[in-house]
Image 1 (cartoon, rainbow, N blue to C red):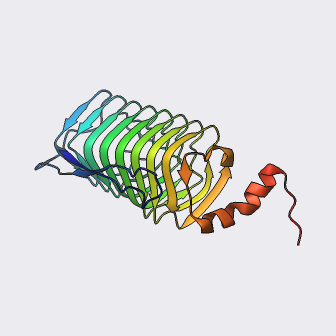
Image 2: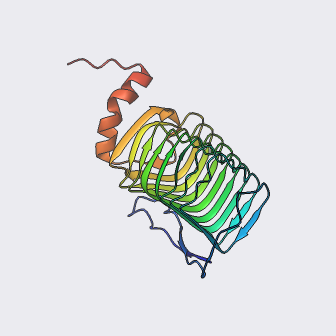
Length: 229
């Protein structure tokens, strides 16, 4: 069962902080049920050191579960529901979580590439540590989500809706915010802030003075301003 910890008030900036989950898992049973099944129901189990590559768990429900050091290469989890669960050290390329729902979830030290989460709904989710390349969150809805101490390479937030989302001690490289809608998004804690597209969609976000200076050349180019020494 997850408890919710209220977020910060934004240190006087007026931005509302994300509410973080504090997942408290019950005693778990080791999972020995074979391959994942579409629309399967997984409750109170730990999936540890399993090769789930290429398996089909579309529409499955994971409740009070732990996925630890599992391989998720090409694993199909479209429309899956992951609730009150912790994913630690998962790795894989091309994991399909399109239209999935994650609520009260902690994702820790993941090594993922090309993860498909377009149309997904993330609510009270913490992504802590690890590296995720080419994360596809187009048209997704993120509410009370914290990216902490992780590296995001070319994440795609195109058309997504972000509300109370924080980036804390993480590197954001080549992010795409095209057509995104941002409300109470705090980017000040990003140790690297690289935005490839969608600078015009940053209304509703807060950045630091240093970040503004770093983004100045890109902003000038977008506005057609020529800067000469």
